[in-house]
Image (tube, rainbow over all chains, first blue to last red; front, side):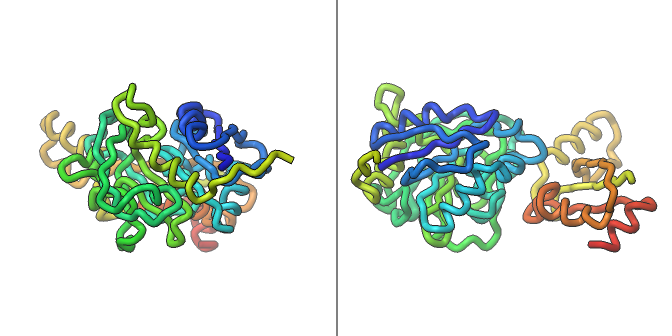
Length: 220
Length: 83
């Protein structure tokens, strides 16, 4: 599988995302001003503060030239993962339902949390079983998910009982689109890919898409 | 012409920032301050105010979580008619 990792001005987790992807396939960065997705099989929209988070987190990044191509790729069924700020961007782009609001505490939270897999039938959770627990860090200020009426099957990950760090509706940590090819989550799986740093559970998300797109196409 | 747009959290959505400001006001002795909400004001100059509602809908406000209001004023009245 060949991953493309988006880099906006203000991204800060794109290198960790790139290294996480490389554990399971090939990966390259994609610059926000380009329109060409370089033939990648999957796109990761990483965390950070794209365009300074001005106006609302993700609101301006969503209109970047590259995102127009990512939206087209996602609508055609291509696997797209949005992490933290990337999740905010995908919500603003209308690829995922709902919106992210400031944490209930109004504080930046940075801690390891347990996630429960609710839907193991998406492009990024198919290496998991429903009910699996994943230990992954969160670090954000605007992570309170809000999506009244979201269908249950679009809830992909929840914070384990008692661990909701931001006041998110129904403990929701991650969601998908109706088709399951676009997934977004506030926690950072790319920071949990090596037991050396406490947990390798986050790797399961990247592994999932590698299972769906197994072979790396030879470079022409 | 100058246009001013007020954006505020949608009613019913928890607004911890408004709550924090309310508590701070009450701590200062202004016990009568209630239902505090914090929004933002966007000011801009435009040639054609009829485009302003679309600017609000596509970028300036997120209709899931925010309401927008084009504020009164000569230009505002025309922009609101375009909505």
